[in-house]
Image 1 (spheres, protein in one colour):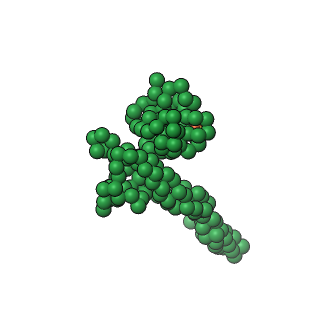
Image 2 (tube, protein in one colour; image 1 turned 135 degrees about the vertical axis):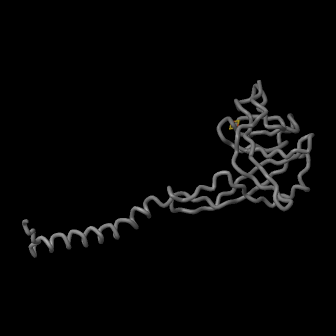
Image 3 (tube, rainbow, N blue to C red; image 1 turned 180 degrees about the horizontal axis):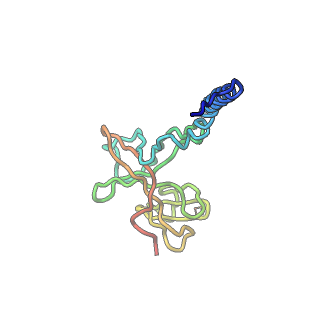
Length: 171
Ligand code: FES
């Protein structure tokens, strides 16, 4: 039976390699964690944002509703303000339309084109949409305004992500 002895040099090698590896990992792990942090954060997708609009105050006339939220962009947090055009349709259902024009992204207004009343109007290139957000054929936008997901909490309107408008596009 052979006796394997560890020399002093080998012992030092093993010990220093182990301690060095441990210290290296201890230094690198926080950096890896820092680099990946935004990826590891739970996403707030599907969350609704509170507005100061009371459900009871929503009428059949589209009203501009501004709402703000904190946006995390990597390590930078900023406050973003969005807008929705909100009204109740003939069935009493809430409709919340995005104001972003489907032509080149300008902001639409309600009922500001005197020759075409009760429509959404985009002053950039005279784009028009009917009240339900459908683009008026013959004007530049090729699709309807998006709609916001929405819900109600404690009597107030909460808005979520935008999605394609179910009305479909104008002819
Ligand atoms: S951006 Fe609205 S019509 Fe062109």
